[in-house]
Image (cartoon, rainbow, N blue to C red; front, side, top):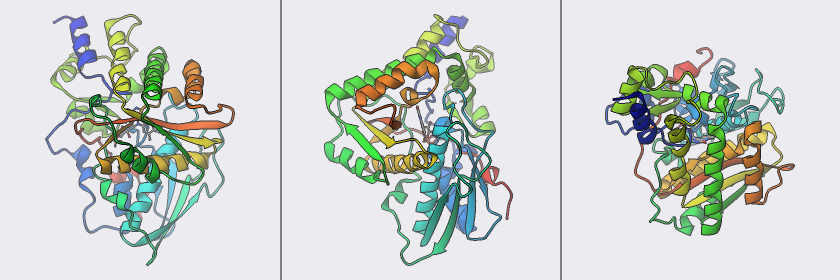
Length: 385
Ligand SMILES: Cc1cc2nc3c(=O)[nH]c(=O)nc-3n(C[C@H](O)[C@H](O)[C@H](O)COP(=O)(O)O)c2cc1C
């Protein structure tokens, strides 16, 4: 088989998804996904709750969390792992901070389910600047056993939640009551949630998401960042336990013999580049509805809030049997995306000077998808107690 044909198969068959991390449905029980079985029964409380938190959705599945357990037995401090940033697609680490909000929300839920109330102090030594994260703590959490601790019904969905990058069923509309339930679950302070099932607006956003993906495909640094987060085949997945997974005989074989390259963007006009570019269009075009989150301003605390609201939304969708898949390209702040970024603000009627669109996700029905890998909890802990 010729190189071109391999690339065609790889590009056409498996490089799908906004970030094209199509997870193969493996039935083998593997270490990289064992976190989805839940924590071992007997464990330090904080480790037990952290075992749920690390299942949080996060950009490119980079898992940018660092936890320090040393200060007090009922406390933990959360930091950004500065080795795990996405400078090309997320130049100001807005999405990385959102990915800490999702983590905090699951941590608080897990503690609540065990009868502990959490006090969350964001940025105890001051907020990061607008342009970059730094070494100060992102949050300090203190836990206290309390009769008032709330066991959140969404907690039951934590082990079942998946980001689903399959095309959605275009014959199956999402009922309005389900959309309303998802929106309701995401209510957090100062967070505006928008949502639509109306076909005219759904189509407009389908086109926007597709156009933004195309723009990303013309931006070498962004393409490279995604290529470098691809984990092709079980061996790579087990070695890294992060990133966007690609499984299947063809890509694994192609990678093994050096035909699926991730050290350079595909040449413009090549079949691989066309296939990559086109791989996400069917996903955008099968959106049966859209949900978005907007904050007035863009402080770091608002980004954390956006993460907390987002994971609640995805858990509520899981509870309703609806797939909810973020498509973040048009929200990204690098110059090559500017036209689509402003276009999305026009589509949603928001003001780019004042408002920040923190998340945009398509919703619909899709077959189940496999869980994404997670690193070992011990890899996130700065230093054991
Ligand atoms: C801020 C943020 C942005 C994201 N953007 C995208 C995206 O553009 N495309 C996509 O396929 N997934 C996106 N995701 C989902 C992550 O890729 C996903 O959470 C991660 O791969 C782990 O998979 P899981 O959610 O199934 O555990 C995003 C998640 C977050 C928190």
